[in-house]
Image (cartoon, rainbow over the protein chains, first blue to last red):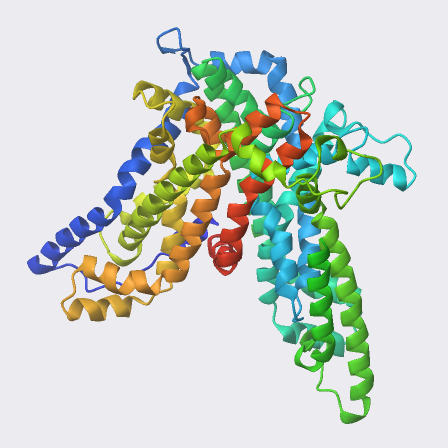
Length: 312
Length: 314
């Protein structure tokens, strides 16, 4: 995504700055350009760019709210690898991603295919399905927590109704809390990815389907041989976005389960928060941050590579 | 609930009469010849009815959390988690909606949320559209490298640098104040990115012509680009507003005194303190969602466009 943006950048060249007048013009342009950028840039530099760079440096330092910063090399990382909570959080985050990514993607695609038709009132359905995505997170978490309530919550009543006697304990059980969070987040996010898939579906030329039908392709064959291949760029983008957002999962967990019961839903972001802001271990928490960043980066780069190989 | 079902039925009916105007282009390879037209129409009609059926059931199922939230907000506490589920309260407890304001300082929370959302949105839209103009319509050395820096930080998870941000705010003495959140959220790279994506689609010739007519760059931005980019401005404003309104982690980290809390924090703390007051909790949830619902219904077109621009053209 990012590389595309950069290459998209060319603005028509004006005549090359040779003469003195042009050089003056260039300096004037630089001045004008900077005055436009500056109001945003100052805030961006101070509160985003510097913290980003600081996070890298901090991960090699020992610094707590009680001691002065000191360069310690890889010590934070050694401690992290030896720490049990780090591995628990990493495992939970990966499990969350493994549930959240495929489920959200599949449901978003199904919904998009269902809603990609010109029917009267289709807009209502699209809007309704999209709405959970922008509903306030606390409301979502609170409602789902009650829906999942083990004894008389609607979810378990439904499960009893369809003949499941031993319904799970959801957020009160350490085995089922993570699935409960995954279900909630899939419900919340799929409308957003449905919108992306809808845009992708609408970009597929109708002629492709017409040609396939002339060739006698069944609906299933059209889906496999026309729809899915044409959607590859969208799917790629959706997978990258979903994976990255899964690894960053934070607020939903904090509000829904706060990492519990026990440590069963603690994720990386939460660990960073607890260690860094909760306990003031600035250096150590930054080491975990760096791991989170590297995971996100690796996933993105990997998916770019896979995409490139497929296109070749 | 009943209202929605009525709406859907009404829509389904109007479609029944309007079927010819709803082409199923993709499914019909050639223009149907006169002889088999009626059978095809018949088929299309049954397909449509089937699809409506599927959609109504599906959307109703997906809306269950909202329906349940609304219905519970009008019940007594002991009626919320009943077996079997009561979808419609036996007796509507409207007093929940009047009592909540005295139970928790809801009005103050709403004001705080509104204040933060408005300030951050205004700053983000203003500085974002200015910077986007600089990045897309003014050529100067170092511009693209700088933009790369912006894009680069979008790829870094916010959680990875929240600790340095926190230390910085602590040093500046800004923790437990709105200013911390405003400073952290009003200058995001996302706004610049979204606006620039849109400005790239505005032909440079337009600016060129204005330059020849003697308009300054600021004049071009204010009088030509801004009016042309209303849809993008609306998208950015709505997305920023809703994001700020719904933000939980920012206020959670920075706002410790109750009088500064936003709706999200207030609601969460209410749940923590009175976790058996199910009905009142749902009332609070409804109140926290309603402003978003209104804004969304007014500007849903721009939401979808904003997502399509920032997502797909990226």
